Length: 151
Image (cartoon, rainbow, N blue to C red; front, side, top):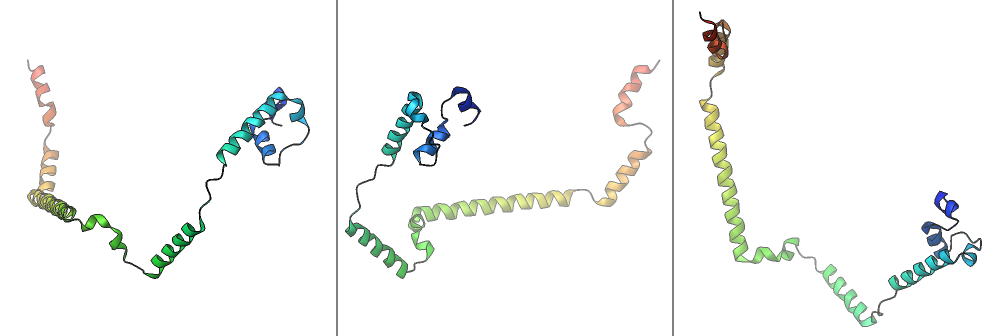
């Protein structure tokens, strides 16, 4: 028994499930405690309701199913024959159109990016601009502040 069952003197759900499957305690508690016996009875009826067997399957159905499986195993087919949606001409056309749109858009983006890189400054010009900025005595952002202090 765990702490909860020791405090309440009732079996836990785990203990009832163990008893239901024949591995739980067998100390006679269920003969004395009506509450635990009622919970166990509810579990048993729920178990019976869940595990009711379905209608038996006929031997003819099972034999036909087995023959069908063996027939499919003896005739290997390519995997693409099972893709039925490809066979429809409308879907083929839609897939081809989507492919052309994606490739065209990718090519356009690539050309724009390549053009931007070509128009970018060269390394020598960038180094010259940076060195020119370092020779200036005052940053451009602080120039308006000097106008405030002119007498």
